[in-house]
Length: 207
Image (tube, rainbow, N blue to C red; front, side, top):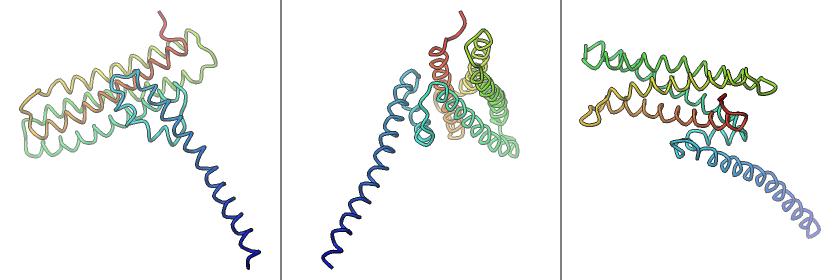
């Protein structure tokens, strides 16, 4: 019996070593990903929100390049826009039934978000085309300009919706809508900043 205890103890030690060996690299990788994300988000207007929105994705995918981070940020911005539109559609439907005066305001805001969704979708596709270019050229600058134009337009549309709401004495419904759209504005602003960081690193915009 005593002879079996030593091999069993060695087996347990080796097992623990293997577990530690797999955990440590994973933990180190997550730490590197987090550090990279935090450093990149410092270039944005809302760095805390940037880290909050992207950290889960970065930890899963291990993104560590400006191009991949820009692509991810734009995808998250599009998701936020789709989520916001779904909420506005639901609210508009309810307001139309009771013929509320807020219906037209919500409808106008939804149309602006619709426009933003189209522009963000185009920007993601254009960034994908840019990433397929083998080397930077005039065509690359054209892709970059398109992405910047479309993301900026989406940001303007969403900001226009936010500007419709008063600063004070808002109803609960208006405050909720403004909060959701404002979140989309901030996420899109961050995505544009991360794209600028990517474009600057790989040649920037054409003067």
